[in-house]
Length: 88
Image 1: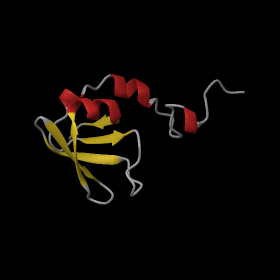
Image 2: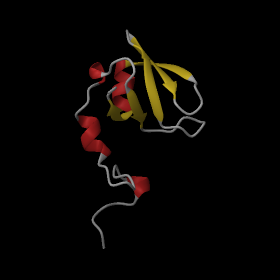
Image 3: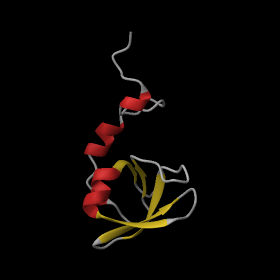
Image 4: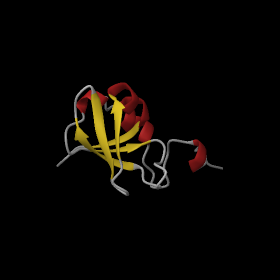
């Protein structure tokens, strides 16, 4: 029997990435315009991935699946962010 929990109750995705370790190492202050982030909960359209389009007191994000725009405080983004993909 495996030590890992099933996907629904763990931070290990089916692709084998430990998102908790990645998330803990990326503060929200290190995001830049054009970066992509994966949030912990899905958007109602089913998308998890967002692009950073505005930096300031709030951080503007655009859903990469449906194009919906939202603004999150830096604190909320830090709490909700699972993975950070820096712009290349």
